[in-house]
Image (cartoon, rainbow, N blue to C red; front, side, top):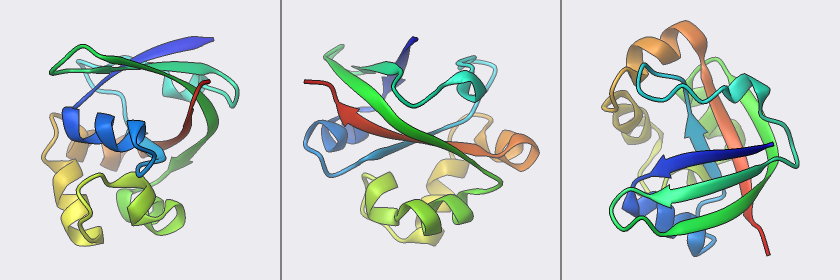
Length: 118
């Protein structure tokens, strides 16, 4: 299966440069991607929201976590956050996204480990 995700400029370039290996996502009223149906080996097209540039990736693994802290501890802050911040600032950053705080508390969060498809 192939999925398409729109992604902000900084994380897009961090994935492109290989410094960010995990994209964290949840469903919101705007993003209805069925994260619970994504599997290892699926393809994921990342689209830069600013430039429309695309990266073709393959999903190595997807893991569901109950909360952001658990995800950051297990996946590694350096692999998930393109900002280079610590866990507390990372949690604060995730909660700043539309509907993330409420939906993470209800449904958890997915960590999608990606590799650029060559």
